Image (cartoon, rainbow, N blue to C red; front, side):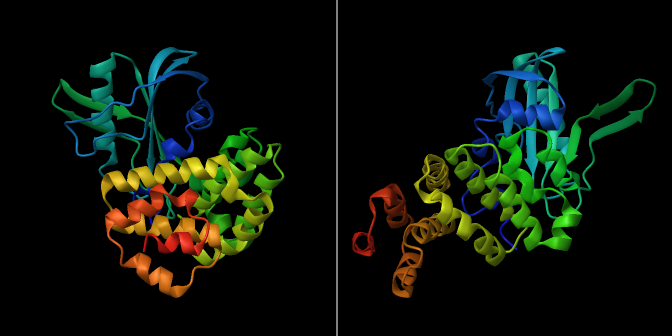
Length: 298
């Protein structure tokens, strides 16, 4: 099975993949009509994770609010404590009501609680809740019928039971839904690229390659603006974190996209490169058009 999302080979967050669709995300998962005012993008210096996934100041039918969407690919029994810390940090800093949604898109069923509660004595009580959504429990048809085509990239993560039973057939249905959606070519390219990334969470690599290869060629995905934006962002974050393995996998993925097949000696050399050399290849990836060009960096 492919890597879990927090350490995925592209090192990209859901926040970046849906940077242009935040109101649709809030509307679908929070059942809340909201207009995004600005990104709050706050840091949490007193908690173990320094940055939450997506925080937005929104105008809603109930008034202004800080809407916090947290994305989780694994079951974590400590998530209610983390969500509570986020809520208190947000309210302290912005003095806004905090509306929180936990969106789980893991392979197994969600087992995480949707809040915390306790009572101790006559005065000490806690009753804290947030909205918890298991994407795998949502039917594929529900997203298809929602009218939010920007969410089609999430289709491979829906319908857990159906996708486990039908596997390739299910993933093919997801891809065909995007291909036939009322989107322009660039939007289809971006949606398919995102869908391929998300499919890596729950489908084996050979299945993904088999199903996406043909449609990628048809729509020429490697030439799309979304392709360049997403992988350039992955390059930036991989270099920031200094993860040599992430850099190496990003290099190989992009080179496979460009050349379709890379001779084994080149692959072996790339695997032996240090972070600096890998970073140079990523910085110049769109100027490397032949294997001779690549040799200059090996």
